[in-house]
Length: 197
Image 1 (cartoon, rainbow, N blue to C red):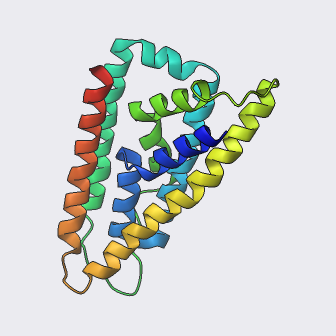
Image 2 (cartoon, helix red, strand yellow):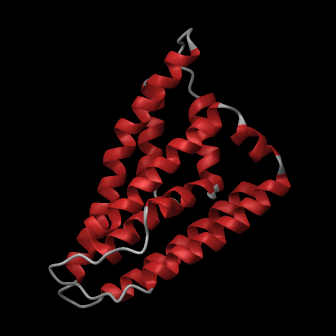
């Protein structure tokens, strides 16, 4: 169980496309404005985990053509999210802007992310908890994952909010939003490249 918890911490600590987009949402729209998106990403992560449990993720990862299509869709969708973030006016004041990124956007960013499927598969097949009841093991793993993912996603969003606040002094928030948008796109390219190598 310790190895499983460490693996979940590592997944929650290393930013991939979804986590980078949560930071970017916090930076562009503030904590409150980015919260629906972060909650959607959390919901999407749970959907991916359930798809991994029922075997859909394994089928998807075993089909090279589906992985290619998923990577293309992922990159395209992340470009859309990146434009939403980069297009934020970068004006920082005491009020938080309403985000154009909602719960559905957060769910979709996970569903089109090939890395999310690979993580879901590895967490559920690579770390057996030696529990004789499969349903009990699934419930325990889901509880453990969410007890780590929920605060981690909120911390990443808060980190984006801190960037937003700190950069208000130098008026560089717009530049940081553009940089975060480019990093999101780069993370998908790297993830897609590692998926096919």
